[in-house]
Image (cartoon, rainbow, N blue to C red; front, side, top):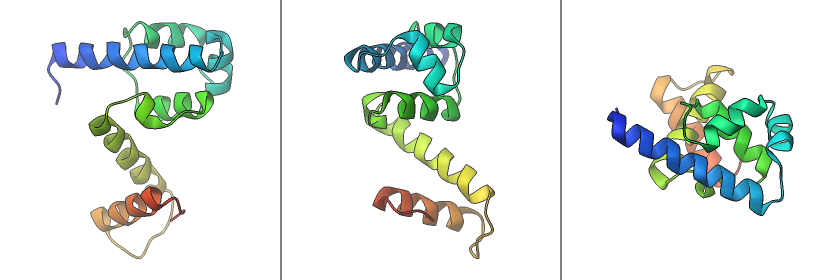
Length: 116
């Protein structure tokens, strides 16, 4: 678990990265909010580093901007987002493997670019 100062730094860094990628792709905050199905105030707070965000929100923003996840988060956080996405995907489907084996299988397939 991140300490408060580490969490604040991570949120500020992520927010700055979102702003940088959004502006480099010439996307307004309003358009990003619409594409990511978020409120404009949410985008403003994320870019200011003032809002804790879920992995689902990170994924929505990443898809809406159309950039690599690594452009928004550091490599450790990127892996955590991928793992969380795999956990959600596995939870929605029946899979012959149990628990962590299912997640590992989905994660490996995600890294190879195929669907589990």
